[in-house]
Amino acid sequence: MNRKQFLILLVLGLVLGGAGITMFWKDLAGYRASEAKIGARILPDLKAAEATEIRIKDANHEVTLVSKEGSWGVKERGGYPADTAEVSQLLAMLVEARVVQSEAVGESLWPRLNLLDPAKPNQKEGAGTLLELKNKEGKQLAHLVFGNVVKKKDPGNPLPNARDGVPAGRYLVAPGKLQNVVVVSDPFANVEARAGRFLAKNFFKAERIKTLTVGEGNEQWKITRDLEYSQWRFAAGGLQGGQLDPSAAVAAVNALGQLAFSDVSPDAKVPAGGAEGVHTIVAETFDNLTYTIRVQKQKEGADYLFNFLLTGTPPKTRTPDPDEKPDEIKRRAEEYEKTLKVLEARAEFEKILGQWTYVMPAKALEPILKGRAAMVLQPRKPGDEQRGLPPGFPPGMMPGFAR
Image (cartoon, rainbow, N blue to C red; front, side, top):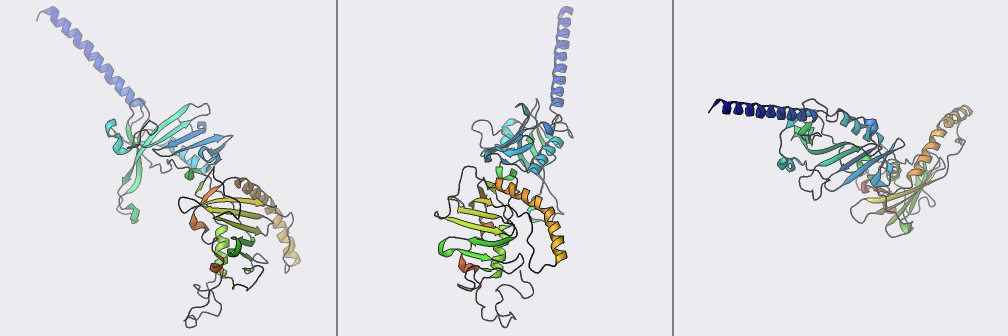
């Protein structure tokens, strides 16, 4: 090798070395741009207030939360109000999410972690859960694919469901040029493509019920009471057809005041009362409000479709009880005046809720949809006298613990 050849090789070496250094720094810059460093935020530039649309999609389901005029609604449920606290919590978690582990995982291994993008065509096996954020102009603020939950062993946790570990984080494909697979510091249990999770759970509360009518035809029963704290009795018949079981009456009334739906069905409607399989429930309250409810068992599953209509307006003044003293009448009238506005606002809100059809768990309606025979007090069983139960005491209840 002569001097000229040596100089040419030296120059080529310097050029190639410089190119390698350049590529190294480019890769490092790409890594830094991906924000996949331990402790770094996944979405460092995200401002929660800018998000007006949240889309969550898995291989089978999808839910879209949309903000209009400051209120969040669920697109797939006809715009039904979303749980503001749930949405706010999710956005806050995204802002604060940090990398606790970064993995060099080839894309061929992503299905094992359920990290494939479900928005891509024919993506079922190994698909994760996509979370996408947009602003009011439709610009994408985030595109994350969440995968398997990471569990941490906790020998000191005695709960049975902690035997295999407790959720401590979650795999996801981090945004950026390198598309790193990382583990974030939260399991993000609320990243779930189920509309029912995000629906506002504020529901009607039938309180201070005066009469309750359930069923159709021969199976219909009606109970009533004269005052708010009076004993329940069968209406229009008294003891005819049996004596009312007070525990069954209280269970039915309490259940009606504690209903919680599991989902909203935007397209379904419950037929009018009298149609096959339809149960009608009518509750009249001491506040001059009447709840007319229709329920029908779904064709698939054990849950019910549930419609309700609220009519009436609360009275402007309170009617005193017969045994009230003058000072009690004045005091309670003042208290009623303070609560009237709240009652009126609640009634208006509940009338709005009546425009949707709900999915109600069958278990929640069991105490209400009993036939008349199940509402009748059963005769005492042999041996009740020896157990010290007084005559006419409802079966299954111990003296001193009346419900």
